[in-house]
Structure formats: C-alpha cells, structure tokens
Length: 367
Image 1 (cartoon, rainbow, N blue to C red):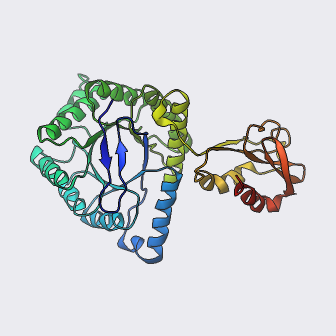
Image 2: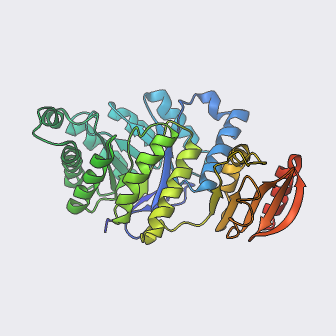
Image 3: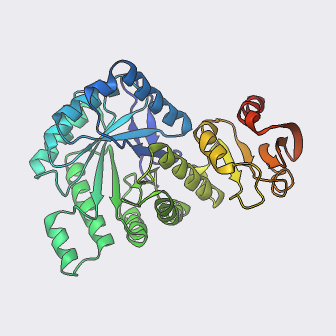
C-alpha cells in the first residue's frame, strides 16, 4: 500500500487525499494557454463554470502547463478563484515553481529530466515544505536525464527500467531532504512500458502513483490504449490518481477515466468504485428512426454530471429499444415516426422527435 499525501486542504481548498486506501482520483490537464483576459469578467465566469462542471463530472484535480512567469501568475490568480485544486506543470525553470508557490496552487509537478541540478530541486523542496504543498515527480520517456537516456539509446537499459531509475533517483533526493509529500508518475507512450514501469516501481517504493499513457492519441485510439494499460494496472491494485491523455477535450478525458475506473472496480479494485451514470447506447444502423449519435453528443456531459447511480439507455429503433434495454433506469428510443421514453422496459411517454430533448429532460428530473 502506498502512503497518503494531501492535495489542497489550505486556503479555500478542500483536501483531496491521494494514496493509501483513498479512492483513485481523476485528474485532467487544461488544453490551452490562458491569458489574463481569460480569467477576468465574463470570460472568467465562463472558465470557472467549465472548471466547476469538470468537478461535478468527477474530476478532482486540474493541471495547467506553466511555460513562463506570466503563465505562473495567471494560474496563481485562477487558483484563488476556483474550488478545484489546481496543479502547476513545470519544465526547465525551477523559478516558475517557486512563483507558483506564492499562490494557492495545490500541487507542483516537476520533471527530473529537465528541471536542472540538485540545488534547484532543493530550493523547490524547501519552499513547498514550508507551505505544505505536495510535489509530483513526473518522468516521461521522451525527457529522461541524459545519462539514463544514453543507456536507453545504446541498448543497455530498457525504457521501463529507465523510467523507474529516473523516478527513484529523484525520489531519493526528495527523501534525503526530508520531503515525503510526493507522488510519482512514469509515463511512456506504449502500453507495455507503462504497465511494466508502474509494476516495478510499486515493488520498490510506497510513494503514491499517478498513472497514465502519455501522448495516447486521438479519442478512439487514445481511449483504447489507455484502457488496456490502466485497467490492467488498476486491477493489480496499482495507481492512486489517473489521467487519460487524449488529443481531445478535457471533458472526454474525464469521461474516459471514469469508465476505466468503473471497469477496474468491477474487476475487484474497491478503490475504483464510482457513483454516477452508466450510459448504454446502440451503434445505429439502417433500422434507426432516432439519431442516437446526435442525441448522445448533446446529452453526454449533462448525464455524466448525475450524482446518482443510474443506467441510461439511448437506443435507435424498436428492436433495441425497451426490450433490449429493459435493465435501464431510463431510456429513449425511436419507433416509427415517434420517440419513446421508457423506464425499466416500460414505455412512459410517446412523443414527436422534435420534443425529445424537452421530454427527456423532464423525465430525467424525476429519476
């Protein structure tokens, strides 16, 4: 079992425990660079609302890239205005980490492959310890320390072992300084290296693990790769926080992470048990009389905000409607020129297609 660290729990931020027996935590990373105008006025309200929506959907931590001092100050100001604990992602310049620590930024991620010498790391450790802010050692296959990267290049060290060696080396520096509020991640772009690195590290350290496949790809490919790697790791009880890295929206990253955790929970990892919606929907075919694709797209984010454990079915025709989805707490399907809404296989409303969204919303409110 890993030790537990706490993200947040100061200023206005609720504490988020990571590790130990705590539930596996979902996080994502913001896709765009922010400016000060993005966090002010109406734009700032819209941004804060989107972040709150991610929280309702099940995301507990949100990370931002911090490439320069302006980005650090923007993140710091945003951290003062939202209830989601925000994480600064730092490469190359340790001073950016120090600046973020002047604000209620809940966690700092640094990369040992490019952050600089030990004295720079120790300055970050000292400031983080004084403030009570945890750090993540984030090791990537593409930015290993030079000597380790050389071993990989000449074939004397495989990638998975190289990731572990880099992480343990940096962790030793942290622990020699007496700093133990540390999580670790070792991310590769291949499934095999991701699985092996996390397995090996879990045998050698009790530091909490952030798991993910880096640069996993576009939506379909990225979800497939992440599901294969992360579900297997989680089924073995490894992993304390998870991100599904997609060339897609932050919302879809959160949805994918929730589904992977649900699968791991069904496979026996009690820390992956999740409340909330399960959506079943048909793929659509020539029999369809209801556009399931468009309806699902419109309702996906809203449905994943449901806090109750419910199964929702979105079906295309009478064949796969109430009969095949009779297990659903609520469902919607096409039937000829009409749309049916049903509960546990029993039709409760028959409406015209143009009224489908309104009727669905009314019935959903009754769940």
